Length: 449
Image (cartoon, rainbow, N blue to C red; front, side, top):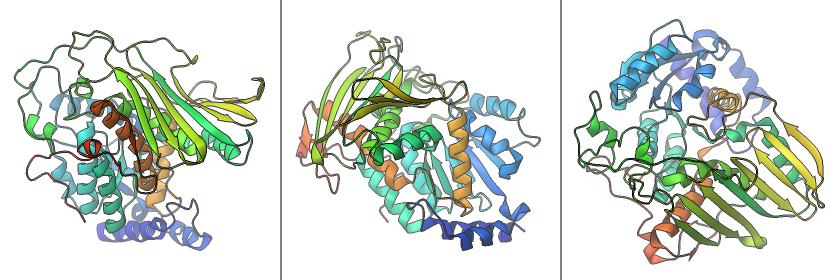
């Protein structure tokens, strides 16, 4: 039965891969795959990374009508595995296996798909390893740690034909889809500008100092693809985001990914022609935070379109009246859209339509950000694997949105603006291109395919 089930999933996926970017599948293929249900339709999954995001997948995984079996929970920290096991016991009536090393799971031929919610430096290498091992991937943002990894993700997807759903879950919002379709159909006229923003009041973080890894942490596996170094106090639990570029991608990769994706989608643009950044660390200047905590970035596109990013990690003043969201401007009006819905304004600033959820939805700036959109996004991933739907956020689109965050990080690190080839996405500046990729621990490189 296991072989028949895997064959069925493969045939279903093969029927969907060709339509992942079109948004439709033929009625013939949908009907043929819908005839086979039960055990042949069951998708066996694992979750890698049991920190703040993984709980957002549980409602979709545990819902019996989705016919999913969670076989493994994987994390390099024992306490995370134990907490996850206790948490999942409230939602399912069987016990998943607890595993430290994702490579053991990838060797299990029964597993169909992996949810990857690890630190940033693991995302693309882990996804490529999974595709090579014949697994589909739900890949959390940022999908890549650097621009080169985005290129590799697309190449691996094309070679192995697996589904990769990027975890920018607002793409699954009914309200966001409604208003962006309306924007594309001219509801605010010709679009010319979007402002994407994020505000948080993150506090002081400790100065890192050399220490023994915490009990239960496999520090070698935590580092994974990253070159080996000594453990520093308080690195492993979320603060890796702010302690240099070995593991994290700063607030751009951490949060800007979401709003910049909506801005790019709404303006219907791909790669910019010019990137400029103003950034700096302005708060708690003597603490351990090594990244910028404030950034304004401007991306100029063809046809005189512009996206602006305004990010404040440690100043909680909501200058736009909300903690996060995207403003889209057109010749005849404007739109504010976030994870809860949208507001449509005419040219005089009068509210003419509003579609905002009352309760539910995704958390705003809270850690984790789980909720209804993550459930919709996960279910779409399952249906795409079965060949019944096109992916909401295929990796070919995800990597383009992610590139905006990489451009901004690179511009911040070299402290200058630069021009971009708006067809290939490559940067013309030689200094900037030195940051196009990163070094890997020997043996962990992502090999070109």
